[in-house]
Amino acid sequence: MLKIALVTGGSGGIGAAVCRRLAADGCFVYVGYSSSQGKAEALAEEIGGKALKLDVTSPADISNAAVLCGKVDILVNNAGVSEIGLFDSISDDSSRRIMDVNLVGAMSCARTFVKSMIARKSGCIVNISSMWGQVGASCEVDYSASKAGLIGFTKALAKEVAPSGIRVNCVSPGFIMTEMNSHFSEADLELIREDIPLGIFGEPRHVADAVAFLVSEQAEYITGQILAVNGGMVI
Image 1 (tube, one colour):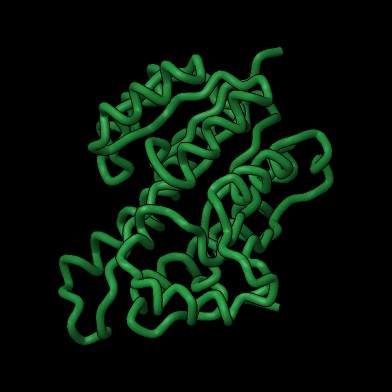
Image 2: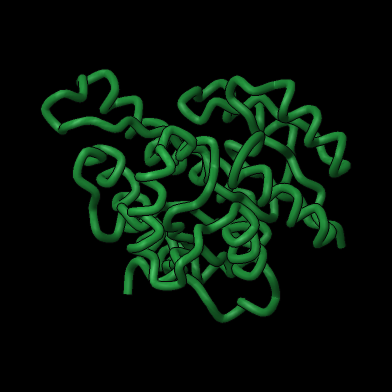
């Protein structure tokens, strides 16, 4: 039976890699996007899916997505934002934005789509956190807090919905070469590389592979877990 997947923040970087991998594995994929409509539509056409306007901070967008998608077998909460700066220099508005997208948005999407999963007694949710949610990062305190919250959310929800046959897991990427990290200089990148035991930067496909495993039958006895994809940066 064809599985339906929804990936928030699916138009670029990690999200696009996840969409491509799930489509290659036989899923029909809704490519969720907030503002990058052109990228999302191009990707959807490429993989035979459908672009879907989904700002995870908008209750109206989430409700509309639930109507348009109908049942969703796989929900990947990937939408995220960050801001680098000293903790006392980040505005309250920016802090709320980070929390609303990274944590509250993921919870809102899960709260909406898990209802039909419970009714069907099946479904998978994968939340995309970060190694900084595990160990914390200076100059990314709000981001780290939001991603740590996502890990706690994963564990708690997994316990609650396991009796309904629903699995909830989390992927925690390390340094992945995406547009979000394009601001680093070559010198900075070399310093970061030196901190990675495997000595290479992660690629979006590495995260997509982890997601694909967690939603597959090979992971049918795995729930509430944090799968680190970081080249050994957190051991």
